[in-house]
Length: 309
Image (cartoon, rainbow, N blue to C red):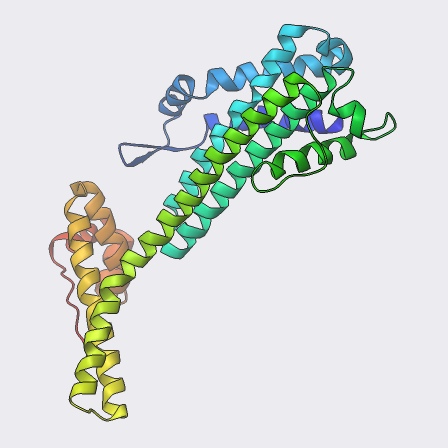
């Protein structure tokens, strides 16, 4: 009961917090309450209300009395759709990351969590099929005094075994056999999708490094061909590596910045150039008393030049 009440309070507070959380509209952060409420009302709000009302009704009436109503139990089953919010949450986290490696780790965590959710629901459905018959696997492999945790873990073990191996629990009825076939097909699809997604993410990192590896190989061949001393060879490698990274980063940055709208480009220039300019007392004065002027200076009067030493 405590966990049910905590979950209901949490999702109720989530509705209230979402109504006052700033959102991005066409790439611009918006804090207008009316715009936020309008967006929320057209997206998640109807589903959130539909899912939270049965929870409050169950707390008010009691779980036993509430579960006696079949339609209400079906509505509570719709809570599975909350899992789709995880995709939005992971997307928000990914947008705040600037490391390709961390994006890869986040992708692995996301697919692993998705796999756990699939295994959990297959386990719950497998147990529901088992208790629907008097001669099902539940009566064969479990005792009446077994607690909920043992029943769940055995169902979870069977569900996870469909992805790679087998276990001592076998279907006893036609319904269980049909569900086992369905679970195996789902396991094949989910497992192949998981492996394919991880492979694609690893391939992306390899492609990012392939050009640089080819460049470094050319440097080593040049040093070997002309028998350059180790000390000079190390200096050459360091200089060319820094030069390569600087040139390619500059090229990529130019391609990216061209696509930004003017107001966002001004924001980028102000945020990256103002801290350096404000080290001078004159520009510090502008930043304190004429921020709009300093913003214009950062955008119009300042250019960046990369120098290798």
